[in-house]
Image 1 (cartoon, one colour):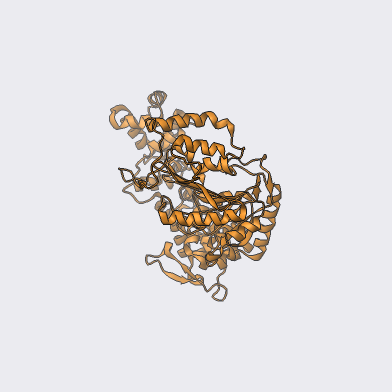
Image 2: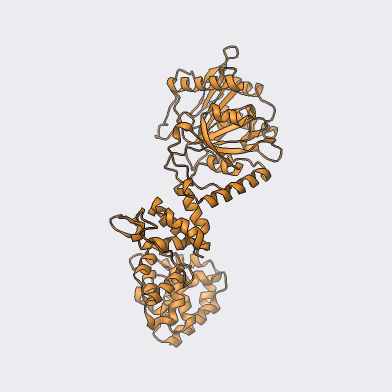
Length: 552
């Protein structure tokens, strides 16, 4: 009877990591033979040999290397070998199935073997280990489908594998109470549309929103979202009768549409928002997390801002909710988001922020004469009402870099005083006739001359270095391009043109806002707040469903 060469394995492990041992086994004879010998012994037909081999391996490893070495020894087991391991009468040996790779290219999934044993009464002793295998990277859709076809006893075991109590009751669905249509696409080849009460997978999928397993809950969220708004009746029922699933059911209802949220939940949310509004402290918004445009007005009259922008149906919001609206990611990134976040007065300025072109902003890199004319006309009108009106836009061109496209436009007393675009270059399309701006230095001086006095002076040294870097890239030439020249939309490699981090720090929308209005990246306990925030929608977009999940 062979034995594992424990001493030599210890020596090899002392020379490097388990990963390095695996690499050596690909090219060196000795480590390859040691691992193959260990694999043969732990899978030997004789149960005594198998147990002794595992005991020997246990002496070789410690807690930091055990999982990796066992996984290496058991790597690439054939399906029948894995079945023997998972069905081994010795619980110590059987437990080692937990270190086997779940997915092996070229073989059926290990989950398939675990399901077969879980359904076989002869292997009742191995059911706990089978459940543990199924819980590793759980195949939720497969398990849901198996559950539908399974007898009652097997359903209990599958429930446990999915992170539910064995006796979890499912929601009862009647034709009278749930006749809406759902998309049963995850479970049919034809992506069938059926009545909710005819879909056997829907009740279990909703119950899994309360699974104790994070991976199962996440997959259940995706499944139920895929069923579509027809699932909302059952989700409302889950809010009442499935305590563990309540939170995720509410998130999905909000995702399908705020009007689907039960009235009692809406009232509770409104109370929570009111409480948070009283106690919350403003927090900075990270520059790179924002992606859209915003107006800034020197007023504390939020109602006047809503009226001037033709916004309607305002609902109370916290600053945290507004920050989520401003972030690049959203619950439905492929859908237009009509929400406009209108802040309370922040140091005397009220800000209205939106994504896309909800408030009539320019699309990124759209600076045609026609677009500019519309922008100027709008700002001139608003500035007559508020004395001053600012428009800022900031877009991250590439999620993997810090390259941005931005613009800002300032109007006072019915006249546009400055319009600057920061992209492949710095473009000034409009400035005061009495104070023309033809160079980077003059633009920098204009911003500093109109500074309202709250810019963060700690960044002066960083800005000076950035200015030197920008000049260096331009070989010392600080002249601005002629506004009649066409800005390049794409570089020679076909990528959208964008501003560097240094250029954006000096002349981008966020940098301009820091000097000229309110710096949303520097909000904090020092910020004077007057009033509360709201989310509103343009009157022209009232037909859009208001939906999405926002942190409170």
